[in-house]
Image 1 (cartoon, helix red, strand yellow):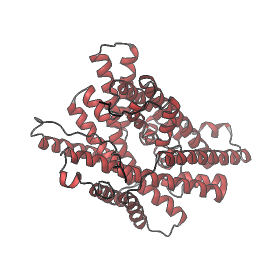
Image 2 (tube, one colour):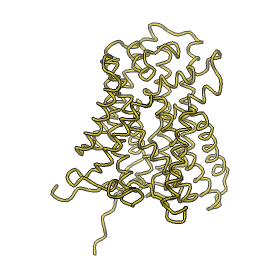
Image 3 (tube, rainbow, N blue to C red):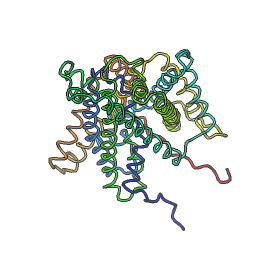
Length: 449
């Protein structure tokens, strides 16, 4: 009897790094530039770099856990197996909020970017248009291929180079003094740790997506080495690239206030640095990137809900339904689209980003603790690195978590409370099996289709 086909280990370290950078996107800091500028009163570069430290520590923990559970690839699985299923449940429930909010903030950002072109477009109309577009694309079963994602990633990298070139040309014509060169890192007139850490709590959105590298563990050459290296190096490269972008942007703008629209501050800088041409290039690229992200995030959320429906963690008749023609979890796509629409109308970008980071920091803290528990407590590999690094990652993420906006913390706490109540009811007082938050694997189309 022939063996069942298995995944081939063909991905190299640099394949993983490229994949990770495409997941995060080279233009990741563009959307949060204005918000972090205002929250941190100009210390965007410092916020990006502090966030990079937190993400590097956490990326190491993801890589370490991928060594032990190479087929898992999610914070929910790592925390469930590394610490306890109950804490894994809390982590998984917070991940649901992340998945659902991602299309919402993409909807908001696409609307704001479009209104820079057509300012007469009412914001609610833009929200309806983009939420409907994401939903329609997913209902038709349209899915970007890996090759398309690579082309988009390379294109966005080119846009970053165009933007940095425009900033350099502008600054060459009007060179800043020494004080201005240092101000994006440290401005003595506005610097406080509370402001900078408040900005950092939002700036960490720049790095969201690096954990996706660990899902490829079964297709990687030497996964015990390469998953951790790729995750850490991806965060480092994105951090350096992001710091360069926001540093150039702040030098060109000259201050941390006065943006026409705080959500699209980056494109305002692009216009100042390179005129209408660079503004058009950057704006169109960001709209395309966020349409891709929003559509993919909506389908990801729909598939997660489908997995919960299929396992009867949610009502299977609704959440476990798959359209027989498109093979898409249609009900869930419509539900997430409705949430993106409602969220886009009720939330602003800054609050949506902080609410998304609420769930992300829960997951990051959980993975850091799971790494410590597995290697130090269970396997008794009591090295200094196994003690200090995961606990440092947990501490830094906890500190940034505490600096999220108060409203985001309240909304996130309410979401967790709903999850705990739901879990208690579903498991009859936590005496039964806990809900699974593993997204189902992609299904291959049937032969002949």
